[in-house]
Length: 128
Image (cartoon, rainbow, N blue to C red; front, side):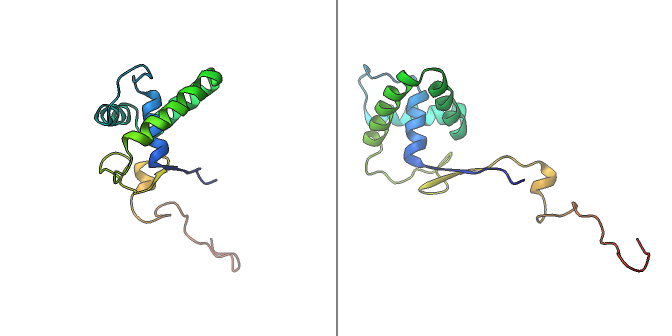
């Protein structure tokens, strides 16, 4: 069974980070303040951690999470309008963020399948 992979746009990652940040609609927000809050949230929780916290909130409080996500998307869109992807956590893939499960050292070293196959055995002829 192959692990599931999710593809998120940087806009979605930024909106999730605003959502889980301490920013509030009543705050006086500047692009710099929002960008710093996004960077802090991603450093604290990681990209998938932000998404997980958003999912948890939608499960626990869907009626208020919808309102906050609409606000977070608008704030993130405005703060990052016209900006190129910034180097750093999650931005190394360009427009898309690819989330993959972590592999163990054995799985990630060498070429795929290395050390996982048993030697081939002859089916006919009695050797094995």
